[in-house]
Length: 210
Image 1 (cartoon, rainbow, N blue to C red):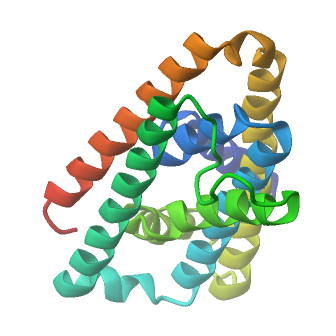
Image 2: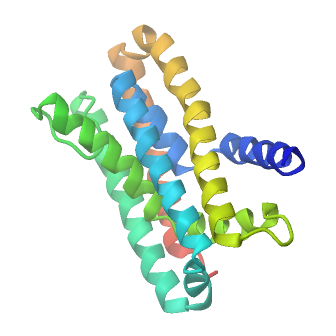
């Protein structure tokens, strides 16, 4: 078991260290509050687990084989990134700090749901996350082991590992929040994160199929 778990956890660490749209969203929402950041992390990792289960069932192979299915999910994912980027830039222009997925004036419970659903949607709308799960998880299934339960277990471990990893991001942003909350700094952070999300959305929209 250790021969599988140690390389798997090492690979999970390298994956988490690679910045992407979800990382930008987690940091952006962590500027609002630690609770918002943590719920965004939980939403994102729910998406990781979902794609892992889908890959275990072999359904992501359909996405890899179907150009139309991939293109539909790619366009949806690009739209999500562009909308989130535009919302962030608009918040920066207004000088606010609205959590992605929610409008100002929402109560705390709905704001928390907005953070969770934004993280979940960001992951599920990314076709590359689906294809990556399909190619990544089977590499760590021992020969002769039952594929479905083993891959589901690895997907759960992957998600739990990343919760711990990204919680460090949330904690770090929380430690710097007093400085980051200064209007000028906050506005610049909003502008940078919004611009990054727009660029990632445009890049995803223009990329070819799998």
